[in-house]
Every structure is written in structure tokens, then in C-alpha cells.
Length: 240
Image (tube, rainbow, N blue to C red; front, side, top):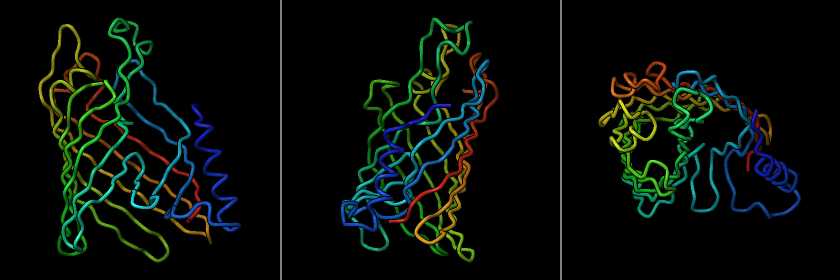
């Protein structure tokens, strides 16, 4: 199990100081620590469990939702536009996991930056379209990401439900699933997400799942074990 100690200590420090002074201002929302289980779709690779920070809120002008952060530069109540960044936490591979393909080396998580535009839809729905480009030197390519989502309350429980489709450039797909004998092309992936939070005073617990379903360009790879990536997570945090 991997433990991100600096992030954990930071969250605990924020919680201890929150009611004593304003050092945490302008943090808002739920900041916490959670356990994540990822069932990656690589052969000879076991599911990974790790401890990681989770933020469902933001800091000043920066809004943060799990692995994605954004700064809006336009908002009028119906339309919005933002600069956005994310850590690609669901696609990576350690070379040692599969000795048959160890010579391909590691496939790292990517840091991606881009822009997104969105609009408020009827019946409480929102949609957003983002273009994300790798800036970390991992896959060195891009992805289009279209999401439709809404936020609901069932009593004290807050729910975020999101359905999306992603278009991944073939260079990105080759980085994570290509081999000398197999070079996949551009691919589409569906994303399904559900996150629930439950406040308990100034604290809160959360749980959720995020799943990705890929087309045959990925599932036909000799590296791939099926066409799905499933992440399940839960944890506890402090409301600012």
C-alpha cells in the first residue's frame, strides 16, 4: 500500500488549525484522505491499493475535484470557461509487472493541462468539454473529454453523478497499450462516476467509484486484460 505522507500531514494540519485561526482561508469544501483501489486493465498486474488526498472543493479561485483542478476565467451563470489541469491517475504501468514486456519500460501517470468550456442545462444538468495536453513528457499527446453531470441531495447526502466520453489520440493509446507488434489507433472511452459525501458536523465521509470502458483498440492489445478500469475509493475529510 502506498502512503502519501506529506499530503496526509497537510490535511491533518489544516483540520487542526481550521477553528483556531484563518490560516486555511480561502480553502473551502471537503478536504480529506481516502483509500483507493484501482483494477487496472493490464495483464499480470494485480489491483493496486493506495492512500491519497481527496479534495472536493477548492482554494480561492481554484476549484478542485479529486484529480482535476480548474480556474474559471469566464462565468455568467449559464456558460463558463476555465483553464484546467489533471493528473492521469487511471492509466499507468510498471515494467516489472509483466516480465514478457519489461523491455518496454514504465508507463507513467501524466500531468495534463488544457482548457474547458461548459454550459448549464435544463433539469439541473451541466455539460463541459475539455482538451487536455500532456505537459509532463509521458504520452506527449492529447485527449478530448466530454462530460454530462449533476449534483443532487438526498437528505444530508450529497451526490455527484457524471457520464462522459473521451477521445484519446493514437500517440496516447500507443504509449499505454502499444507494443512492437501492436500499434493501436485513436480510441474512445466511456467514463462513469458516482461520488457520495455525508457531513458529520465539520467532518465528512465520502465514497465513490469511477469506471472507464475502452473500445477494441485498447482491449485488443497484448498488454490489456479486458476493456475496463475500475476505481473504488472512500475516506474521511474536514469541511472548510
